[in-house]
Length: 244
Image 1 (spheres, one colour):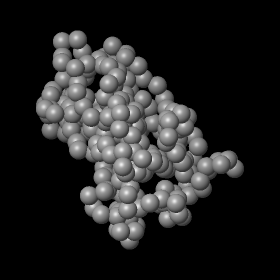
Image 2 (image 1 turned 180 degrees about the vertical axis):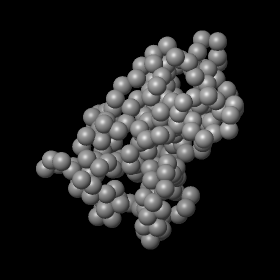
Image 3 (image 1 turned 30 degrees about the vertical axis):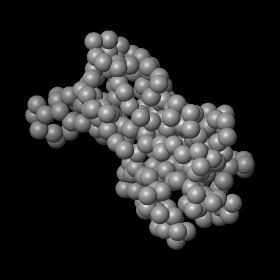
């Protein structure tokens, strides 16, 4: 797909968790529609002179990347954005209101779903790293050619930080596991990190599974090392690190 510079108009914003908000927008009428694959990301332009740009060169725009959280077939595009103190990207996007316009370049990235009915898929995400995985699972590429078996393990600090949990529970033939490192209740969710859950998993067929990892760089490195121990080849591991 060819990267395009596009104009977008905000249609809705809402709080998803105490630390994450959602921005919903559409391509402005004079711009072409955005074509992308589930898992790809958009590069938002933060205009020069924005009060959220601290110490930047005068007259110079900044750009920040965010994975698209919605299905490619939807006209409305959704981002789930972590609130970062003094973060120019999250600060700028949090300031936008319905009707506001902004510029961005898209699509980017090769962290996309590899359709294969003969193989299993294991999706592992932490925090807002679930965004591109949500886009993959909601896409027609996935529904037309789902994996043989599918597992999504999503890690968050506690129940109040869980993103899209009820939605994943409704996806046909998808086993959804929430892992909380600091749970607030005695529920049925797994207590611990996503790496802890993976290490105690006995029924997974490692040799016939493709892995999709997104979240912290440390988590991804740890899981890659573990999968290497299990004999999983590099070509079966797909990842996107959000932060170190």
